Length: 544
Image (cartoon, rainbow, N blue to C red; front, side, top):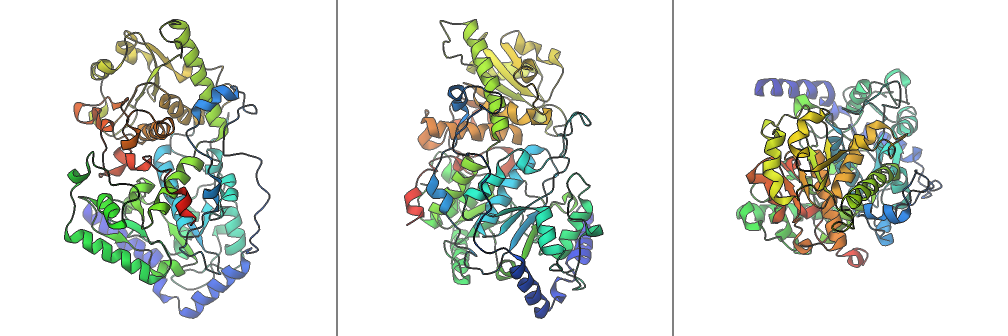
């Protein structure tokens, strides 16, 4: 496998990167000049989309009432955050771009990569080019009966996010290709010749994206050494090469006395601690190198981040585990940015709110005196094609691992990819089990490809939640529960712990959210409290 990997790397470098150094300075200046002249740099943004990211109203989405919908809200409205502009590249007179390829895995792997790309685009002051709508793994249900090609705008209010934030400009791939590629601004890195898109096509929605990916790799700077898990992308608090050098010196100091993960278990570094202390926790026991946003990358008109599994080029990581900011205020800003704006769309949130309301009503009717609030518990049980065999427990094993935390005969919602109900009988013998499929009326006219996201949001509202270790689907549920715990100031919120959140797969993982756990590879296996703990600090300091 290693030989195949090396051979694939050599082939890619020959086909796509070999000519990068051959572009002479004149070509680079010509390209940059054209990019600058083609950009609409008036500073004016288009009229705002008709939407409000701050709250949640379901009156236009089939209900429920605003009162019932409020419990879904974990995000905050912080108007001053909308004005923050990254200092890196903010003074550039040329418009520069960041393009990327979505992850090739399931939706939550795609989501993780997308979060990282959006934060990088903002922090680099680059215009974010969204990939065209396309089929996504496991999101092709009922082809022919409903839409099965999606863009990120179908799941998030990205148009509104780009409008509201002064530091983020978002455009479609079609707009990018019309503005830059079709006007002769993009050059093949090997030959230096002007390169147009395959077949001069600009609208790639619903079309096999492979030719477009290969084209973008040929005409952009494509960093291959930014590998999550082996290096940390660090951004200084101010622009200029001297500030990047200062971060490099900090990393050398940390390496001189390299920290161990054990130093930070249940001992989180304060979010406003000096940079070196926060850096020590971020790399403890695992990462010794920085990914440097060097001068070549900063000058590149377009940076393209690819996803190519054969070369192990993939951003299967959390944005907060891969990106580090010298300024603690900026670090917390980006964590709030993801919490407050990269949330599922109102259509998805409202559908989940209807199901939550129905489950609470069912639980309340079953025990009016003992459960007046309609509390329920929840599971995410992953089966399907999951490669981690140690998590594929039978239902009786799951019951044995979870029974000490659940109430006998309680109403329990199960989010799952396993469609055979008889499998769950050992759980149904002890609990009032309900599944998303039990709420057809609440989900009428909702695209069934949204059901996974709805499952996540419903499961996040359980009194007690049991998830599947290694599952990024479960991971996001834990993160949403972390956001809620901070907003509600639930037990343990100061330390970022989640007392009623567990894994069902085994004793070693079961209670890891009952203590503060620092970042640990592989990062995708779980979520970490550093993403939600105390992130509302430093809002005023950010703008001073």
